[in-house]
Image: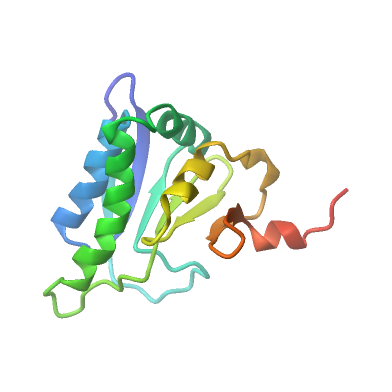
Length: 163
């Protein structure tokens, strides 16, 4: 159940993610003012063209605004470290079928379906850009950080003809 005054954040977690790994992200979201709830996704065949490690469904605009406002605080760094540490924790997991550390954390807006891919190796500048990104420019997504161009982009949106 959501706490009063907190926005909801639904996490769908790969079944191979440990409770400790999940806790990194739920603690970061709680520190940012969200009320996270978690559901473990049972083993399945991957039919999604964007395989993810954790899918976080929350209002993206509110999330990015909140993170942007708290960028100088520990909560911002906690989120950034949680995403990065998932890779390190995944690489050292001892389960028979550990999660693939190359799979990203994905943020998804429940209203628009727009997805933002948070790869574990994102530079600090990528997180800073993300906080001021105009999401209304994107309709198809998913958004990925282009290391070569040092900017967020959606190749599908770029391929769409403009009106």
